[in-house]
Each structure stands twice: as C-alpha cells, then as structure tokens.
Image (cartoon, rainbow, N blue to C red):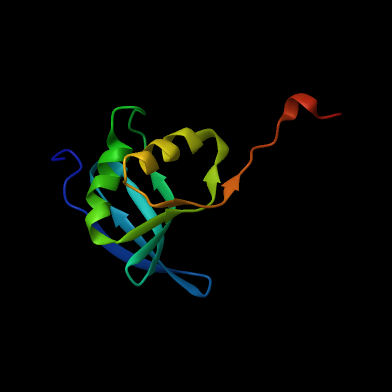
Length: 109
C-alpha cells in the first residue's frame, strides 16, 4: 500500500456532529463519523484516479485496523456492488441506507 501512503486524520464540524476525514495520497479520502470503536463511513472517494485498480479497497485495508465495526450509510445505488464485495471480504461489517438513483427512462415530460 505504499502508493496510498499513510493515513492522516483530521476533523471538521458537520452540522451538530463532528465528522472525521482520513486523507491518503493522490486525493483519496474517507469521510464519516466516529462512534467509540465504530466508524459510520459516508464517503470514500478516489479522486481523479482510475477506477478498478484497487485504491478503494486499499484505503479500506488501511482503515480496518482502526475500528472494530465499520458500517457504510448513504450508499449510491451505482456503487452498491463494490460495497457488497467489501463486506464479503471483511473490510466493512454492515451496509446501511442506500440512495436509489431516479430512473429517468420512465419520467413523463
């Protein structure tokens, strides 16, 4: 995981909550909320890097030792297969809410 570098933690206010952001090399970010030994992951972005070369999985491998339980919420429908695969591999424990994307094929104008 040398390409990803070391994981750097910072925080910021998100409404009344304190969000945690983990920064890695090349614009890779993980954003969520700490809850004791659990992490509520909301955003995993690989920046402008190409998809499907293992950067998202690599970032989760660096995050995994920090928490007993990692659950993912507000999952976009289009990336649900990625999160299912990460759950099967043990990198996340629970999958939560899914944001279904509208199907404009059936919309009436």
